[in-house]
Image (cartoon, rainbow, N blue to C red; front, side):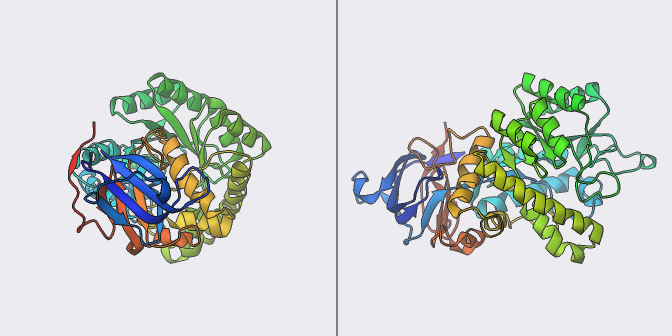
Length: 431
């Protein structure tokens, strides 16, 4: 990916560095060779020649680029299960993924971790972004997901003779689980996504208290993945499913909805991050009726939302780590609405804007395994930034409004925002 070839000074803004420390009023950021050279108060900034390119933050907020920690690049206005497995061929799905990647970057998300991807498109999407063929967030790929036969993601009856080849690997037992992981190893993914539990979306067969994988299958996935340097995560709502995942050695928990004391202790002991993805539940409740969701499904989402809020509060207050994002791409929860999750955590869950921004930057980068490269504004890290016209800590909703973005930068290069077309910066390839 290209980086800025010449120095850049960003000034006249409040710096929120993503570490959780207090903001720097009248802050300055200096970028050299695509990396952060100085982050701090204006009075301590290095003296630069007048010819150095400058961006006026207009008294607004300078913060790290956001990280979408559960990104479904190939989901596109899904309204029914058929939209996922049989509606579109891989060629069209690939085009949709490129559209979603560009949109995510325009929304201030300079990095994203895939939460499962049709046809393993995310691996090639990542390559195209890194080679500057298309714009998008820095990606961690996960490819096709893994679910046991009859589990949440195996909804086609046997008579259809459909094996869900584009969406998931359907496994029966440990050997199938190992085989699925080995196939993903060959495809070059970094994360293995599994389905240990069900969801409110499937109240008759695999509801949010149902287990969809055995512990032995989950453990086989982990041992095989870790042997090849891959990390493992899972869709975990049911309490026992969360505990099975943690005992099996999972590296992240998606949702972590119904977490009891024992599950929380296991999570904290291993310092495993969790991505709650709660705005999806609220959107399902509020907009579900217009998309034909039954009252039973909506009631299940309400229970999931209530449980998820309580679990998220407990995790953060106990010193655990939370990432932000998840499950965008449904008709009632479309791509482009990513920052609504951040607003939700402030207004409905009760986190402070500073806590939420830390989750959406620092922790997100840590989950991707790239916390030493980006996620916070610290010297030496990549200059992935978002500059917002306004005080984000006073009104987190500003992050939902792309028209307020002065600039979105990756490696010091302006990729989106008001200055994207008018601010010339020479670039070079990242080393």
